[in-house]
Image (tube, rainbow over all chains, first blue to last red; front, side, top):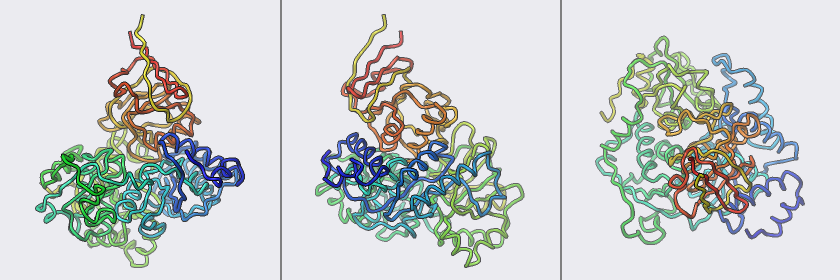
Length: 425
Length: 142
């Protein structure tokens, strides 16, 4: 890899031990992916949750602090493993709070903005067209690459903070403009567009559509045609959520929406390849995806979850309207996840009071993915959710069983204790 | 005598490691919720390796899926619980696996020239990964 004199100075320790340590890793990463050079970094988003990173993660961050590491670029961090505003509502395992606190403290010392959010791109760490990013988090890198035209991989939890400290990153993957072209084509049927989304349905519908696209694309970049000319941030957020778990890449070229896909031809780098691998997505595909996301036909639910990725204020309003004056059924826990910025606004608007009066919980800073689900929920519970992402990430031995439906379906399930999906059946 | 074959590939994380192969042709995630940090056992819905231990194995899978936090989960498996694999081979490396194996010092490779890794290596084969040299030695299970 070609290094500039400034890069070499960093690598040789001319800017201190932390920058040197970071550059040593970044050079290895660049070589692993055959990068020819490094580029300036503009924004950083790092990992926070103790459940995932464990004591190795604590040591990793504390070592960076001890080496004098500092992140001076615009930054943000992922949700953590706890909602410390509602500590009494949870039963954390031994040592859990201490481990999480060490990460929170280290991130503060490193200079990372304490967003504890997966949707920071909407309100706290907003990249621009062609910004170079070192971001973890699939929905965030998906949105920033797809909707904004910022450049970044779904960077790993080690490389992101190290790139932030070095202020450089290898020009690989989505950081190289030459790689930002489509590999396959997804045509959305107009009849599906007529019926998809709407109040109480948009999150589940667009997350399921994203999963159809993502399962087809997998490690390729899909070009998508047939979407509406205008899509709300909430719809786009739901669609690109498939950038993890369905896809391993993190760019969808949405023709007419993505800045690098003003036309179909532009999305493919100038000319649509002959015999490009193509699928046409219809209502049947969405119906089938809803079915695939169900693990059981049991109607009785124990837990209801909404807000993955985190809810925007408009989505909190939508949920409050769906709930109305109804109360959560006895024996059902209803968790709604958002960030601290949105929580504060929701509180000012009286929405938090309404949600709590109904017996539901609007959390901040965390979600069920970051929390220890095996010990908290256990394998015998049935969860209803409108999040494809949470459903796919939290299934397997020792974990709860899932039902998938729209916001309307899951709010009704929270109120009645019975999940009776109506959408796409 | 068991048959031994030599394969060639692209180095991701440099080093030498050997162990019994644990093979699948699907993507995998090192996140704690997918492979427990404490035990190193795969717990992912409908995954072909569900219930298997990765500890000390030469792990072969397609590429990394799910959370980018998998890189630090891998580091915790290696440095705290000793539940990491001895080496990793992918069809195609993802930043998550690359960043995790490089930082944790676990040898890893991708792009095996002779073909898809799961067509060439079976679960139970003894595999030595030398990513300094870009070589994989496979002693077939007898």
